[in-house]
Length: 161
Image (cartoon, rainbow, N blue to C red):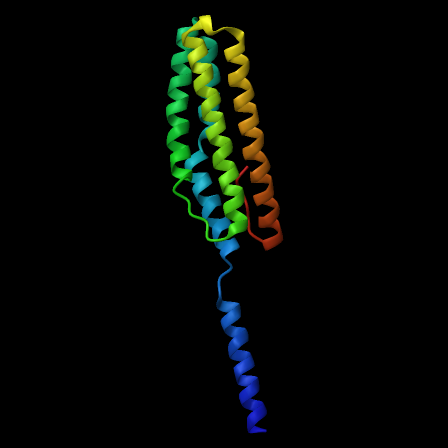
């Protein structure tokens, strides 16, 4: 009887320790979601402002100046995301894709800015820049979708879009 009680106590203690152990995937998801909201929470407003300024800019040089401003804001936000260190390989794989997608988007934005500053680069430069931005966006959004699925599986409230 005493032996079975000890076995039961050890079993209960083991279960309690397992229950108290934190899931690194859940921790990573929550931390990355919070960082994403902090870094990109105002992006809708930035995009709205950029669209208004782009429409108001009468010259390509003016439009390039707007792009330059947005690029600076975007770079600062990406730099914040790059500080994230995932503990779980599942989350790290997706956050690396998100950051890679943002890096691709930045390259595209810089190509567009250069084409606006120097119209001699022509339509090809504009097309290349747009393609880079779109591909980067697709890469990042695909990875966000994967994190969203993982969050749902783990029961984590996920707000990053």
